[in-house]
Image (cartoon, rainbow, N blue to C red):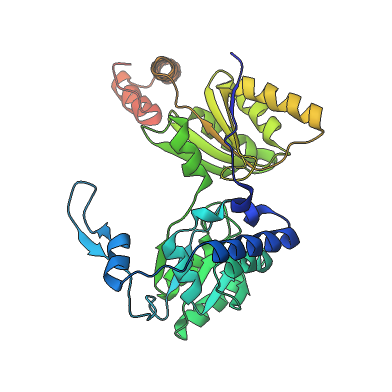
Amino acid sequence: NDCFVERPRRSLARHAYDMPLAVRGAALFSRAAALALVLPPPRLTTRASAAMLCLPRGGGDDQPGEEWAPDASGASSLTKGTVYIVGTPIGNLDDLTLRAARTLREVDVVASEDTRRTAVLLRHLGASPKKQLSHHEHNARAASARVVELARGGATVAVVSDAGTPGISDPGALLAAECAAAGVPLVPVPGACAAIAALSISGFAAAGFRFGGFLPRAGRGRREALAALVADERAAVLYESPHRVVATLRELAAKGAGERRCLAARELTKLHEETARGTVSELAARYAAAQDEAGKLRGEFTIVLAPLAEEEVAARASEARDAAQDEARDQLRERLATGQPLSRAVREVAAAVGARRGA
């Protein structure tokens, strides 16, 4: 079967976050100016504003909870000495939540993976000038110590990555661990996530999934990560660069996942968003051909593998049982050949291979 490709239509103005810095700033300014001329400022009463934004809190989807409404007094809703892990758009600025926008406006300091990129977002929110602290994979330990120091001094700090949620295949995990160890309060401010976005349209994740993030680029670690993804019976999601996506799909196919259903999502939420469906082998061929034709692929990929079919799960379980039984028999024969009593040999073999005595 040929791959099925979907390319949704997008608005250029909403993707300024992914343009070059100079063009991006001009686009944002033009959009803001146009809106200011066309739309009058909202004039809502405090009660009306709160009613529009009331959300359930505390209960599950089927349980009533308390209602939350924004503070109408103008005072900050943040807690001093707290670090906020803020999810930011993965491409489309409209995906920034109201809570994330307010947090970024109100915090004292923003710890950013790329201060230039974050400056664009802050200007869009009317939150600049804002003190920024550089926090990326090369200075994570020193930056984490600085964030802890600031929070202990009573500052509110927002942590952001270039796109998505800090700590999820982005800098932030070490910082969160250091804050937790130091007793600094951490508050998540959820946002867009490429893995969850791709899973939501895949139709593959009804029974859970395995998250692989970015795989190691080479060596034993890469081989083991790929083998683990293929061996897992659940759906699996991973990120890949355009330079390695063809190689990764081919390696997955070589490890036995060639006929497994797959979704490849490229440039999610961005102007040139594209999703393709097919088997792993079909997608490997598709993107290899596209790479040969264009010279190179563009945009990061999110790859979602479908869970194993029930028939394959049953076949794997049967193979594993047969292998365990064969191993147990071989070990039992070896022990009996040395004169070991049968009862003792059975006990030791069962303990060694996890097989039942009757195997």
